[in-house]
Image (tube, rainbow, N blue to C red):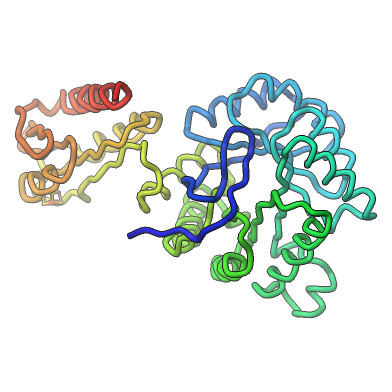
Length: 357
Ligand code: SF4
């Protein structure tokens, strides 16, 4: 039985993070936020890929001003990523942002923090405290000598206390590090210490290939421990890839309930069809289908029927053709050149039926 650590639910626009809700997939744009057209285009691509909350950098006044128009043109909650400058936070809040990522301890004078908290309270906007192993406070680094999970927890406690002292508890916390064991331990300590939702991430994890593996190892471990309420995979790649990886990861732990899962064999000398091409194309095809369908694509009849029994739809290859299974029952034989097309049709029909229920 899969169990999640209990947290306070925190509303971000029309999405609730934490409580008994599903893990929410996030990403961050790579465009200049002030370039509304490019930013909105990228957010639309992220929405199509399954992104549920999107963050933009608000690093100058033009970016803060662009929030208003971006909000008007997108369909998912928008988060402003702000460092140090409380005026940018106030401007972003005024322009309708749904959450701010800012560390209260880095804002400066208490009056400035109070202003931001007051604005967030008035509009019901949460704050994400983003602890990062690479930018821990000087006094913490001096105390521990180098970034440690305990130091990261101390940093989080420091920022949380500032907000709680102002009677503000719409808080989400992240404990990011690019070192996977360090991030895991920091999140574990945070899950034990706080009842606030946790935003999971392995920061600066690297390229599409390396970063996916790092993120899967780190975030997968945490998800398997029931830790994490929202997830952002950070990759040096198109952010759409981040969403694809995040969704795939959530599928592994059965956290995403509206996605197509593909089972395929590694192929071997028994194979008589071009399974690798078929399955790669199929994987691309199902990315944007929102239905819980399990598809099995097996190279031959050795394991094919067995796997197909567990799947909604499946094929088992043979010489120049494939057997099509539906819920474990053989439906018909299909020539190899038509296998992909027929599988897509079957999946579309099932997805349509699911959407109508
Ligand atoms: Fe080989 Fe058949 Fe197993 Fe695929 S399903 S790996 S083709 S034996």
